[in-house]
Structures are given as structure tokens and as C-alpha cells.
Length: 336
Figure 1 (cartoon, rainbow, N blue to C red):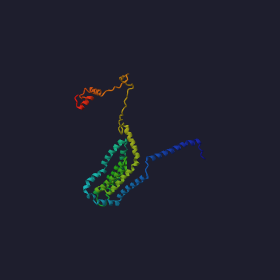
Figure 2 (tube, helix red, strand yellow; figure 1 turned 30 degrees about the vertical axis):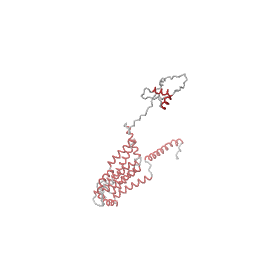
Figure 3 (cartoon, rainbow, N blue to C red; figure 1 turned 120 degrees about the vertical axis):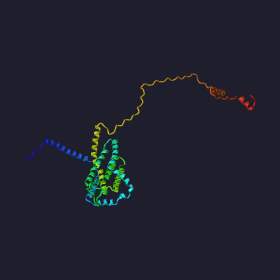
Figure 4 (cartoon, one colour; figure 1 turned 90 degrees about the vertical axis):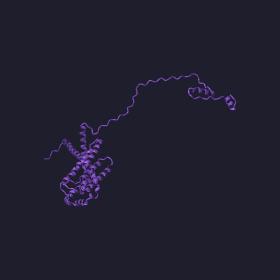
């Protein structure tokens, strides 16, 4: 029998369910897409090439490829005997690739940045990078168990599964990651920092080959592993942001503050004058003369006499001028 057609009320009642299911699927898809940060094609291509290079070097060592012959060809040159005076300085330079000293120095600086930025992101990025480094490098070290050039048994052997732990080069990979993370977190001079980090990692890797502590293939694998960790940091940014929010939430929940509140600066307070006006001081009354002023003409002798009487208290004397008769008598030589 044919099915009964649904009434308009039933069609209307089932429509919201369909819309809700579709909206739920769209929201789940949007959440999945937003969980991963957008990556450019160049970044994805570079990530794939570096990962392929790392895998190629590992397989080349496992299957005794010509790369093993290159390792022995370089070590038979005995480069550490060419310049023995530089060995102490090169041993000190290799410390820049060790995990302990570099991690402590970098974390001290990153801790100061966390304090200034009121965020735990710098330390979380460094911790995430070191964790990825342990996975990519430590796992291969345990898998291969390769010995170094100074402990090799016979020429041409890859020295695998012998209890060693030098493949990939930990010094090289750690130098790439530590100094590369500092350049990654830099706010200014990022390109300059990236160039300096690359030069530092390259020099440390070649120094280990010169000292005879690593094969050249160990250094190749260390460079690839470190670069792979750095390229994976943008993918870990959502996890770092979530951890940062949790750390700050726990920090504030304990009643603390990642940065002490600055004291407010004291501003100058304007002077408050009294509302009542100040009493006016009495001014001396000026006497007004009703007599009109007269102009008095004084002779020259009267002027000098007034000057002499005014300066009588001082030691200076004023000479009185002579009369016209005495002046004529003195000029003619007659007695006064």
C-alpha cells in the first residue's frame, strides 16, 4: 500500500531537526579547521622536503649506502691532527650545542620575556621544541645504536646496533633547535637572528666532524631533524596557546600575578586657595596740595651751596665757584 503523505504539520516539525543536524556538522567542521593554523604551500612543501631528507639519511645508514663510504673517507684524513693548537678552543665552542648550558641560558632569557609580556608562551614554545627534539632524535638514537669514529671496529662498517648513541648528532640538532627557537620568538631582527642561528648550527656540526666525535652523516641527520622541529612549531601554536591560558588561569587562581602591579605615579596637586578674599592692606593716603606749583629759578651759587649742604655728612667737599670780579682780578694779577 502506498504510504500516507505527511501532513504539513509533520513536515514542519521534522524540518528543525534536519537543520540542527546540518548546523552541528558544519560547526564540527569549522572547529576542526580552526584547530589547525593555516599553512602556506611553501611551508608545507619545505616541511615535506626536510622530512623526506631526514628519512633518506636514516635509510642510507641502515642499508649501508655510499654515504657510509663518505663517512670513512673523511675520517681517514684525520682532520684533528692538522691543527692541534685549535683543539682546546673547538672543545669550548662545541659547548654551544650541548643541551644543558644552552637550555639554561635560553630559558633564563625567555623567563625574563615571560615576565615582561605577562605570558608563558616563550617558555612553552621552547619546551615544546625540546620535547619534539627528544622524539625525533632520541628515538632514532635508540633505534640505530651507532658508535662514533673513535670507537669504530673496522673500516667500512656503519657501526650500527653496537650500543652507541651518536646518530643523529645531538649537538647539531640541539644547536639548530635552541638558537632557532630564539630567532623564531624574536620580535625584532628576526632574519638576522635566523642567519646567525644557521651559521652557529653549521659551525658546530662541522666542528664535531673535525674533532672526530661524529660522522658527517650524523651531522646531516642532525641538521634535518632540527629543521624539522622548527618547521613544526607553527603547527603546535594552538596547543601552546591553550597551555598558556591554563597556566595563567592557575596562576591567577592562586592569587598571584605574573607581573607585579606598578605603583601609580604621584602627580602634583594644585594649590587650594581660600574661598574668602584676603583683607586688603591699608594704603597711605597721598596728600594733595591745593596750592599751584611755582617755578623757582636758582642762581649758580645757590645750586652749589645746596649741593655742599647736602653732602656735608660725607668726607667729600664741594668747591665753591668764584665770582666774576675775583676771576678778573686773578687773571690780571692784582691782589684780592
